[in-house]
Amino acid sequence: MTDVEFPTLIQNELRNPKRNSCPINSLWKNPERAPKPASCHLEGGDSVSLHEEPLISVLTPVFNGEDYLAECIESVLAQTYSNWEYIIVNNCSTDRTLEIALHYAKKDGRIRVHNNHEFLAVIANHNLALGLISPAAKYCKVVAADDFIFPECVMRMVDLAEANPTVGVVGAYLLAGKRVLCDGLEYERKVVKGSEISRATLLGGPYVFGSPTSLLYRSDLIRESQAFYPHSNPHADTTACYQALEHSDFGFVHQVLAYARIHADSQTSKSLKTGTFNLALMGDLTRFGPKYLNPSELKQRLEHFLNSYYHVVVHVLVERSGDKEFLDQQKAALQEMGLRFSFAGLLKTALLMGFRLLLKPGVALSKISAAKRNAGKVEARYY
Image (tube, rainbow, N blue to C red; front, side, top):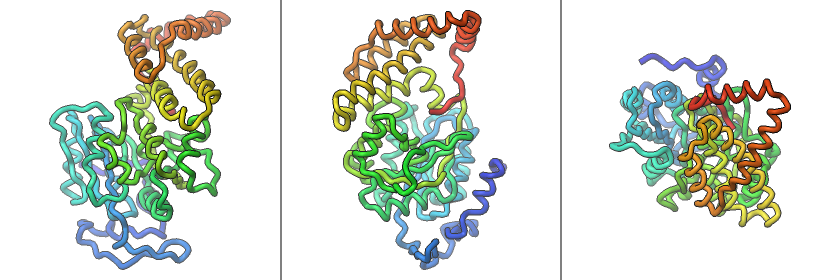
């Protein structure tokens, strides 16, 4: 197997971690045999004993991830934090995913591979992975198979969590393609009350929850329930954040520590095309809005989400020529969260979209033709 080819900037970052870290194990072919120094010195003269590093469980649930998995694994191996276990959960992949995972597991004893005997939906597979973390693990870090983390990711997140025991979820800036996301918090704000950040997020304020790749969880919050991601929508990780922050605070590291890859096969791209992401937003609003928002705020935000949602539904119906099965799925999804699918709302949105297009008939014909031509195709997108 050949070495992974990183972009030059990322390659340099992986090869040259900050001097204030202690990448001692990277000098050894077998990290388990590397000598453990009593301590390493950080900026400001602080000293942290490596024997006191809490165990971190790193997880990568994966299905057919051969294109990016090696890069993901290499990023975990490049961490300046050394006390981790890495569990890769292969979800009945039909490509070289299992071969790649086993290759790395043979090279590093901290890596173990769980091979599912039957295929699971994406969230069920994530919950299975979360259930495999070591009883001794104090924190858990998920890294999506098509993403990766920068060398200081785990160390910086754990440092913040250890310094602030009330923090249950830690986030950081996320590089998605060429854009840096999860901004909006003032630099001096490294810890925010769980209720405060949940309310701000529901009102459309700074979205700092990012994705599992940009978050660190306290393991005891995961162990409190059989399903940490509490429903089947692929964006249940955001719901888990709201749920965890009912009883803990949110920490944020003001550094770019994670990378999200934008490609057409990603769950995010598919969700944005079909309205799954919009359904997740409304589900979180109906579940947590009554706790953090007043009735007027809740109504306003729900109207905002519904308008965006019906816009996506119209696009899908144009592509799929009024797909009845898709409509039935939408009605069932809204009903599950206590909402009613409004054909009047759908018609109003369609008429408004049609009116705008009629003002530019040439553009209208072009867009309709493109929608038909691209039916079933997914555009690479991110939030």
